[in-house]
Image (cartoon, rainbow over all chains, first blue to last red; front, side, top):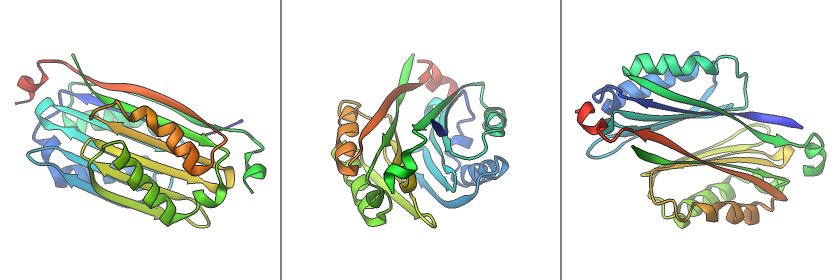
Length: 124
Length: 124
């Protein structure tokens, strides 16, 4: 049995509402976050909602990093699925808490993709 | 206390390896899946890996739907975060199992974003 990766769900509360609505700031923050976690960026897509809020996804070679913000609630939902080296994952909550001026967060890490060892043979 | 949304993690095993490497098929499948779940599509980004595998993210007004495939293992990792109506979510596993010819799947639904009721006032 092989674990394919880890899916991290990070909820940040009491964030700075202005930052949660700052499109360019969020683009740079999540680009930089992916790099600091040693992810290999392959594509990025960010979308500005009206009247407020931003969604962004950084597609990485190891899977994806996403953010969705609700400035009116001071809330940001982040997730990262990575099949890569997990050693730096735990840096993310404090890094983003500081960057977004969050009062607190909830951080959960779900191992997923329990692929049987003989799956490679079966799929070929 | 208000729940912002539900994050669904769906792991599909024993899938048809050819379908997991078919870029156009996956683009259409996940576009259609988002629509069938009543999601509002705002942007889509798909990436083909070398020598194989596809990553795709459909950014929706309600957050995102993503897929990452490992054809060599017959494995596809899907996630959907939605702050929208959750009633159709449970249709997704069987819909994708059939479409990808999967032998089985694991489906988990995580409620997330427990925002305090007074957050709106605090963030303004």
